[in-house]
Length: 193
Image 1 (cartoon, rainbow, N blue to C red):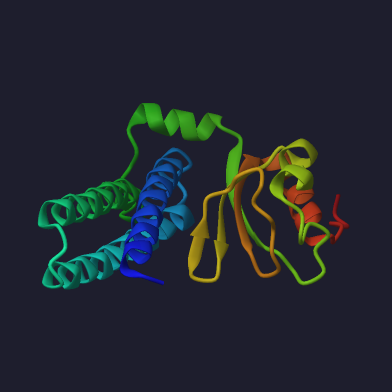
Image 2: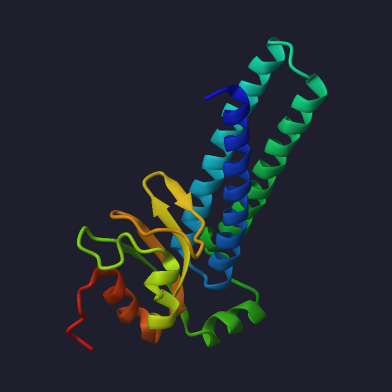
């Protein structure tokens, strides 16, 4: 893989990661969810690390005599993505520090019957190999995938995203659909229902 392809991949990953970080930060705040806030911090650290790698690569390109004005704009793009992720981490820190939400936000949290859950996709899950459109999780359970954690990567869900063994699905939905969501993902029926 040449330097241009690596730089492109890093910038795309930073853009996607910073967007995901903002989405999860707001969700962590609106749902007052510590787990999501912790994920935001991990995503910010990942963005920061990618940006360091990107800057090092761009500096080495500069030493090879590439266009300096073009390289400066790429450095700025990386810095912008990192600043977005940093801002998201500040939003999530409100939850992590246990700061009491504003009264209006507290009323929203209390009136919402929404919750967040994470479920690991087991080896024998009936949705392995299906894309999210075909898995029909929202239609079957009323739950929406916020993010898929795949090893040390976070995948922003799309209809075409294929579920893999070992994925951790982080989803949001109404409390009364939680057992249905877990059942569809794991294939294990909850005997309490």
